[in-house]
Length: 319
Image 1 (tube, rainbow, N blue to C red):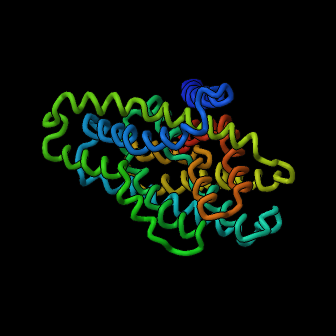
Image 2 (image 1 turned 90 degrees about the horizontal axis):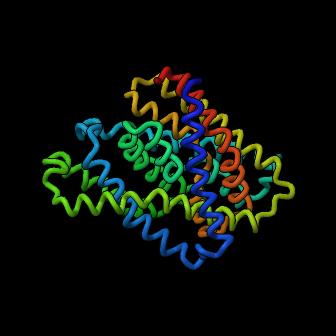
Protein backbone atom coordinates (compact mmCIF):
# COMPACT_ATOMS: atom_id res chain seq x y z
CA UNK A 1 0.00 0.00 0.00
CA UNK A 2 3.02 2.29 0.27
CA UNK A 3 2.79 2.81 -3.52
CA UNK A 4 -0.66 4.42 -3.29
CA UNK A 5 0.47 8.06 -3.06
CA UNK A 6 2.76 8.07 -6.14
CA UNK A 7 0.10 6.11 -8.03
CA UNK A 8 -2.54 8.69 -7.12
CA UNK A 9 -0.17 11.45 -8.19
CA UNK A 10 0.45 9.94 -11.62
CA UNK A 11 -3.25 9.22 -12.21
CA UNK A 12 -4.32 12.72 -11.15
CA UNK A 13 -1.66 14.20 -13.43
CA UNK A 14 -3.21 12.40 -16.40
CA UNK A 15 -6.72 13.56 -15.56
CA UNK A 16 -5.51 17.14 -15.00
CA UNK A 17 -4.21 17.23 -18.57
CA UNK A 18 -7.59 15.95 -19.76
CA UNK A 19 -9.29 18.60 -17.63
CA UNK A 20 -7.07 21.21 -19.31
CA UNK A 21 -8.33 19.98 -22.68
CA UNK A 22 -11.91 20.27 -21.43
CA UNK A 23 -11.25 23.83 -20.21
CA UNK A 24 -9.69 24.77 -23.55
CA UNK A 25 -12.79 23.47 -25.30
CA UNK A 26 -15.12 25.50 -23.10
CA UNK A 27 -13.04 28.63 -23.77
CA UNK A 28 -13.04 27.74 -27.50
CA UNK A 29 -9.25 27.68 -27.62
CA UNK A 30 -9.46 24.09 -28.88
CA UNK A 31 -12.32 24.02 -31.36
CA UNK A 32 -14.18 20.97 -32.72
CA UNK A 33 -13.02 21.96 -36.21
CA UNK A 34 -9.42 21.32 -35.12
CA UNK A 35 -10.12 17.85 -33.70
CA UNK A 36 -9.72 15.82 -36.88
CA UNK A 37 -6.50 17.56 -37.92
CA UNK A 38 -4.88 17.27 -34.49
CA UNK A 39 -6.05 13.67 -34.08
CA UNK A 40 -4.58 12.70 -37.45
CA UNK A 41 -1.34 14.50 -36.63
CA UNK A 42 -1.13 12.69 -33.28
CA UNK A 43 -1.97 9.23 -34.65
CA UNK A 44 0.08 9.44 -37.85
CA UNK A 45 3.14 11.46 -36.79
CA UNK A 46 3.55 12.00 -33.04
CA UNK A 47 2.58 8.55 -31.75
CA UNK A 48 4.69 6.63 -34.31
CA UNK A 49 7.61 8.92 -33.41
CA UNK A 50 7.07 8.13 -29.72
CA UNK A 51 7.02 4.38 -30.36
CA UNK A 52 10.06 4.49 -32.62
CA UNK A 53 12.13 6.60 -30.24
CA UNK A 54 11.28 4.45 -27.21
CA UNK A 55 12.13 1.19 -28.97
CA UNK A 56 15.38 2.54 -30.39
CA UNK A 57 16.63 3.97 -27.11
CA UNK A 58 15.20 1.65 -24.45
CA UNK A 59 17.62 -0.79 -22.77
CA UNK A 60 14.64 -3.08 -22.07
CA UNK A 61 14.26 -4.05 -25.74
CA UNK A 62 16.79 -6.87 -25.79
CA UNK A 63 15.76 -9.16 -28.62
CA UNK A 64 13.05 -9.86 -31.16
CA UNK A 65 12.57 -13.29 -29.62
CA UNK A 66 10.90 -11.75 -26.57
CA UNK A 67 8.72 -9.39 -28.60
CA UNK A 68 5.92 -11.82 -29.49
CA UNK A 69 4.51 -12.43 -25.99
CA UNK A 70 3.08 -8.93 -25.21
CA UNK A 71 1.04 -8.70 -28.46
CA UNK A 72 -0.41 -12.16 -27.85
CA UNK A 73 -1.47 -11.15 -24.35
CA UNK A 74 -2.88 -7.87 -25.68
CA UNK A 75 -4.96 -9.69 -28.28
CA UNK A 76 -6.11 -12.44 -25.89
CA UNK A 77 -7.09 -10.11 -23.02
CA UNK A 78 -9.01 -7.81 -25.37
CA UNK A 79 -10.73 -10.75 -27.04
CA UNK A 80 -11.78 -11.97 -23.59
CA UNK A 81 -13.18 -8.52 -22.78
CA UNK A 82 -15.18 -8.41 -26.00
CA UNK A 83 -16.52 -11.93 -25.39
CA UNK A 84 -17.62 -11.26 -21.81
CA UNK A 85 -19.28 -7.94 -22.70
CA UNK A 86 -21.02 -9.37 -25.77
CA UNK A 87 -22.36 -12.43 -23.92
CA UNK A 88 -23.67 -10.20 -21.13
CA UNK A 89 -25.33 -7.81 -23.58
CA UNK A 90 -26.94 -10.63 -25.55
CA UNK A 91 -28.25 -12.71 -22.64
CA UNK A 92 -28.88 -10.14 -19.89
CA UNK A 93 -28.93 -6.83 -21.72
CA UNK A 94 -32.71 -6.64 -22.09
CA UNK A 95 -33.05 -6.52 -18.31
CA UNK A 96 -30.94 -3.35 -18.00
CA UNK A 97 -32.19 -1.37 -20.99
CA UNK A 98 -30.13 -2.89 -23.80
CA UNK A 99 -33.29 -3.84 -25.65
CA UNK A 100 -32.07 -3.51 -29.24
CA UNK A 101 -29.31 -5.08 -31.28
CA UNK A 102 -27.73 -1.64 -31.80
CA UNK A 103 -27.54 -0.96 -28.06
CA UNK A 104 -26.15 -4.42 -27.31
CA UNK A 105 -23.40 -4.14 -29.91
CA UNK A 106 -22.44 -0.63 -28.78
CA UNK A 107 -22.27 -1.79 -25.15
CA UNK A 108 -20.15 -4.84 -26.03
CA UNK A 109 -17.65 -2.89 -28.12
CA UNK A 110 -17.12 -0.06 -25.63
CA UNK A 111 -17.14 -2.17 -22.47
CA UNK A 112 -14.92 -4.85 -23.96
CA UNK A 113 -11.84 -2.72 -24.67
CA UNK A 114 -9.86 -0.65 -22.20
CA UNK A 115 -8.23 2.73 -22.71
CA UNK A 116 -4.89 1.23 -23.71
CA UNK A 117 -3.18 4.32 -25.06
CA UNK A 118 -3.31 7.88 -23.85
CA UNK A 119 -4.15 7.15 -20.21
CA UNK A 120 -2.00 4.03 -19.86
CA UNK A 121 1.16 5.39 -21.48
CA UNK A 122 1.79 8.42 -19.22
CA UNK A 123 1.06 6.36 -16.09
CA UNK A 124 3.53 3.74 -17.30
CA UNK A 125 6.14 6.41 -18.01
CA UNK A 126 5.96 7.63 -14.43
CA UNK A 127 5.17 4.48 -12.43
CA UNK A 128 6.51 1.61 -14.58
CA UNK A 129 9.18 3.06 -16.90
CA UNK A 130 10.83 -0.31 -17.50
CA UNK A 131 7.53 -1.71 -18.80
CA UNK A 132 6.84 0.94 -21.47
CA UNK A 133 8.25 -1.17 -24.31
CA UNK A 134 6.14 -4.17 -23.28
CA UNK A 135 3.12 -1.84 -23.16
CA UNK A 136 3.78 -0.58 -26.69
CA UNK A 137 4.10 -4.16 -27.99
CA UNK A 138 1.06 -5.25 -25.98
CA UNK A 139 -0.98 -2.50 -27.61
CA UNK A 140 -0.18 -3.90 -31.05
CA UNK A 141 -2.20 -6.96 -30.05
CA UNK A 142 -5.01 -4.79 -28.69
CA UNK A 143 -5.21 -2.97 -32.02
CA UNK A 144 -5.43 -6.27 -33.86
CA UNK A 145 -8.30 -7.39 -31.63
CA UNK A 146 -10.13 -4.07 -32.09
CA UNK A 147 -9.93 -4.15 -35.89
CA UNK A 148 -10.92 -7.81 -36.14
CA UNK A 149 -13.15 -8.98 -33.27
CA UNK A 150 -14.27 -5.45 -32.42
CA UNK A 151 -15.34 -4.72 -35.99
CA UNK A 152 -17.12 -8.09 -36.13
CA UNK A 153 -19.12 -7.15 -33.02
CA UNK A 154 -20.08 -3.62 -34.02
CA UNK A 155 -20.78 -4.40 -37.69
CA UNK A 156 -22.29 -7.86 -37.32
CA UNK A 157 -20.00 -9.28 -39.99
CA UNK A 158 -16.32 -9.73 -40.68
CA UNK A 159 -14.80 -6.96 -42.75
CA UNK A 160 -11.51 -5.81 -44.19
CA UNK A 161 -10.75 -3.30 -41.43
CA UNK A 162 -7.98 -5.52 -40.06
CA UNK A 163 -5.88 -4.09 -42.88
CA UNK A 164 -6.09 -0.69 -41.17
CA UNK A 165 -4.34 -2.12 -38.10
CA UNK A 166 -1.68 -3.86 -40.19
CA UNK A 167 -0.94 -0.71 -42.17
CA UNK A 168 -1.26 1.82 -39.34
CA UNK A 169 1.68 4.23 -38.96
CA UNK A 170 2.04 3.22 -35.28
CA UNK A 171 2.46 -0.48 -36.10
CA UNK A 172 4.78 0.28 -39.02
CA UNK A 173 6.89 2.42 -36.67
CA UNK A 174 7.11 -0.44 -34.17
CA UNK A 175 8.18 -2.90 -36.88
CA UNK A 176 10.70 -0.49 -38.44
CA UNK A 177 12.25 0.48 -35.10
CA UNK A 178 12.42 -3.17 -34.02
CA UNK A 179 14.23 -4.07 -37.25
CA UNK A 180 16.70 -1.19 -36.86
CA UNK A 181 17.27 -2.22 -33.24
CA UNK A 182 18.29 -5.71 -34.35
CA UNK A 183 20.84 -4.52 -36.90
CA UNK A 184 22.54 -1.82 -34.87
CA UNK A 185 20.09 0.25 -32.88
CA UNK A 186 20.09 4.00 -32.33
CA UNK A 187 23.80 4.22 -33.16
CA UNK A 188 23.12 3.78 -36.88
CA UNK A 189 20.34 6.40 -36.94
CA UNK A 190 21.57 9.94 -37.65
CA UNK A 191 21.41 12.22 -34.61
CA UNK A 192 19.05 14.78 -36.23
CA UNK A 193 16.53 12.01 -36.95
CA UNK A 194 16.73 10.67 -33.38
CA UNK A 195 16.29 14.19 -32.03
CA UNK A 196 13.26 14.77 -34.27
CA UNK A 197 11.67 11.49 -33.19
CA UNK A 198 12.21 12.36 -29.55
CA UNK A 199 10.73 15.84 -29.80
CA UNK A 200 7.72 14.79 -31.89
CA UNK A 201 7.14 11.74 -29.70
CA UNK A 202 7.19 13.88 -26.58
CA UNK A 203 4.09 15.70 -27.89
CA UNK A 204 2.02 12.56 -28.55
CA UNK A 205 0.60 11.72 -25.14
CA UNK A 206 -0.11 15.32 -23.98
CA UNK A 207 -1.86 16.08 -27.26
CA UNK A 208 -3.87 12.87 -27.08
CA UNK A 209 -4.97 13.65 -23.52
CA UNK A 210 -5.92 17.24 -24.40
CA UNK A 211 -8.06 15.99 -27.29
CA UNK A 212 -9.64 13.30 -25.11
CA UNK A 213 -10.61 15.88 -22.51
CA UNK A 214 -12.10 18.18 -25.15
CA UNK A 215 -14.07 15.36 -26.76
CA UNK A 216 -15.35 14.07 -23.41
CA UNK A 217 -16.69 17.49 -22.40
CA UNK A 218 -18.55 17.63 -25.73
CA UNK A 219 -20.12 14.25 -24.97
CA UNK A 220 -21.04 15.34 -21.44
CA UNK A 221 -23.01 18.24 -22.85
CA UNK A 222 -25.06 16.13 -25.22
CA UNK A 223 -25.56 12.86 -23.34
CA UNK A 224 -28.96 12.00 -21.88
CA UNK A 225 -28.38 10.26 -18.54
CA UNK A 226 -32.04 9.59 -17.68
CA UNK A 227 -32.74 5.88 -17.23
CA UNK A 228 -29.06 4.98 -17.65
CA UNK A 229 -28.30 3.78 -14.11
CA UNK A 230 -28.37 0.06 -14.89
CA UNK A 231 -26.26 0.42 -18.02
CA UNK A 232 -23.73 2.58 -16.16
CA UNK A 233 -23.46 0.18 -13.23
CA UNK A 234 -23.20 -2.84 -15.53
CA UNK A 235 -20.43 -1.30 -17.62
CA UNK A 236 -18.43 -0.40 -14.50
CA UNK A 237 -19.01 -3.87 -13.02
CA UNK A 238 -17.75 -5.63 -16.17
CA UNK A 239 -15.01 -3.26 -17.34
CA UNK A 240 -13.63 -2.24 -13.95
CA UNK A 241 -14.47 -5.10 -11.57
CA UNK A 242 -14.98 -8.45 -13.33
CA UNK A 243 -12.44 -8.11 -16.15
CA UNK A 244 -9.59 -6.78 -13.94
CA UNK A 245 -10.08 -9.69 -11.54
CA UNK A 246 -10.01 -12.17 -14.43
CA UNK A 247 -6.93 -10.57 -16.01
CA UNK A 248 -4.96 -10.58 -12.77
CA UNK A 249 -5.96 -14.17 -12.03
CA UNK A 250 -4.82 -15.31 -15.48
CA UNK A 251 -1.49 -13.50 -15.39
CA UNK A 252 -0.83 -14.81 -11.87
CA UNK A 253 -1.26 -18.35 -13.17
CA UNK A 254 0.93 -17.90 -16.26
CA UNK A 255 4.67 -17.44 -16.12
CA UNK A 256 5.49 -14.09 -17.76
CA UNK A 257 8.08 -11.42 -17.15
CA UNK A 258 7.69 -8.91 -14.33
CA UNK A 259 7.40 -6.05 -16.82
CA UNK A 260 4.57 -7.78 -18.68
CA UNK A 261 2.83 -8.39 -15.35
CA UNK A 262 3.02 -4.65 -14.72
CA UNK A 263 1.50 -4.02 -18.15
CA UNK A 264 -1.42 -6.34 -17.39
CA UNK A 265 -1.96 -4.65 -14.01
CA UNK A 266 -2.02 -1.28 -15.79
CA UNK A 267 -4.41 -2.49 -18.48
CA UNK A 268 -6.68 -4.12 -15.90
CA UNK A 269 -7.04 -0.76 -14.15
CA UNK A 270 -8.09 1.19 -17.25
CA UNK A 271 -11.60 2.49 -18.06
CA UNK A 272 -13.24 2.00 -21.44
CA UNK A 273 -11.48 3.49 -24.46
CA UNK A 274 -12.81 6.66 -26.11
CA UNK A 275 -12.16 5.75 -29.77
CA UNK A 276 -14.87 3.03 -30.03
CA UNK A 277 -17.47 5.83 -29.90
CA UNK A 278 -16.25 6.77 -33.38
CA UNK A 279 -16.83 3.21 -34.61
CA UNK A 280 -20.29 3.11 -33.01
CA UNK A 281 -21.20 6.25 -34.96
CA UNK A 282 -19.60 4.93 -38.15
CA UNK A 283 -21.67 1.73 -38.06
CA UNK A 284 -24.82 3.59 -36.95
CA UNK A 285 -25.26 1.77 -33.66
CA UNK A 286 -26.55 3.37 -30.45
CA UNK A 287 -24.30 6.33 -29.65
CA UNK A 288 -26.08 7.12 -26.37
CA UNK A 289 -25.15 3.70 -24.99
CA UNK A 290 -21.53 4.12 -26.08
CA UNK A 291 -21.31 7.55 -24.44
CA UNK A 292 -22.78 6.26 -21.18
CA UNK A 293 -20.24 3.41 -21.02
CA UNK A 294 -17.19 5.52 -21.85
CA UNK A 295 -18.05 8.52 -19.69
CA UNK A 296 -19.15 6.53 -16.63
CA UNK A 297 -16.08 4.28 -16.63
CA UNK A 298 -13.79 7.26 -17.21
CA UNK A 299 -15.24 9.12 -14.24
CA UNK A 300 -15.11 5.98 -12.09
CA UNK A 301 -11.50 5.54 -13.19
CA UNK A 302 -10.42 8.53 -11.13
CA UNK A 303 -10.94 6.29 -8.08
CA UNK A 304 -10.67 2.79 -9.56
CA UNK A 305 -7.42 3.24 -11.52
CA UNK A 306 -5.24 3.89 -8.44
CA UNK A 307 -7.23 1.27 -6.50
CA UNK A 308 -6.56 -1.46 -9.06
CA UNK A 309 -2.93 -0.44 -9.58
CA UNK A 310 -2.34 -0.75 -5.85
CA UNK A 311 -4.33 -3.98 -5.51
CA UNK A 312 -2.79 -5.52 -8.63
CA UNK A 313 0.74 -4.74 -7.47
CA UNK A 314 -0.01 -6.42 -4.15
CA UNK A 315 -1.84 -9.36 -5.81
CA UNK A 316 1.09 -10.24 -8.06
CA UNK A 317 3.74 -9.48 -5.48
CA UNK A 318 5.34 -6.70 -7.54
CA UNK A 319 7.61 -4.12 -5.90
